[in-house]
Length: 201
Image (cartoon, rainbow, N blue to C red; front, side, top):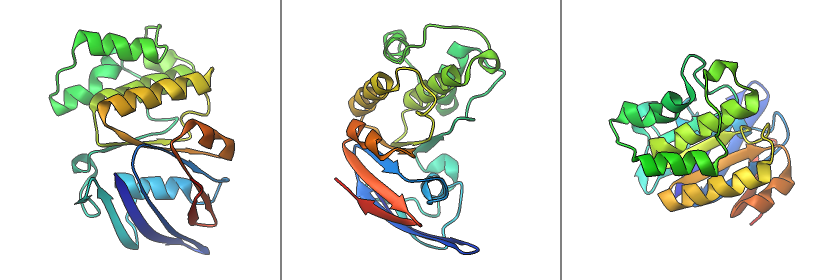
C-alpha cells in the first residue's frame, strides 16, 4: 500500500499530488505534468517541500533511498558493464538474498529475456527488460517504473506478465505513461495534470 501526499515547487511549477493505493497502478500525464517528480519523491531521489510518503503503513518520508524498500526503474537504469544474468541477480545480491534457479528461470521466461551478452550492447528495449527483471528479483515493497514500459515490443503482453509476477511477489507498482489508455493494463489509474493527481478508478 502506497500512501503519498507531497508538495514540491520548481519556479512556476507546483506539484501537489496524492495517491493512496495498492496493487498495479498507472500514473498518466503529459510531459511536464509532474509524474517523474512525484515518483522521485516516493523513491527518495528528490526531497518534498511538504507532505509524507508511507509504504504499508511505514513512514519513509525521511529515510535514505536504500532503506525505503522502493526501487525506481527508468529507461537509463541499466548497468552497461554487466552481463545479462549477472545484472538480473545484481539487486538481490546487494541485499544478500538468494534467488532459486527456478524463480530466476521463470522471471526470464515470463519477461522474454532469451538473450545474453553485455547489457551496454543491447537495444534499449532489451536493456529495459533486464532492468525490470532486476527490480523484480530485488523484491522491494514497491517498484516505480518511469516510462520504462514505453520502448518495449509486445508491451501489452510484457506489462500483463510483469503485473502477474509483481502480484505473486506481493510488490506494489506504479508505472508512468503519457498515454492514459495504458490504464486498461492497470488495476488503478491516476491522471496527473499541472501537478495535481486525480483518481480515475
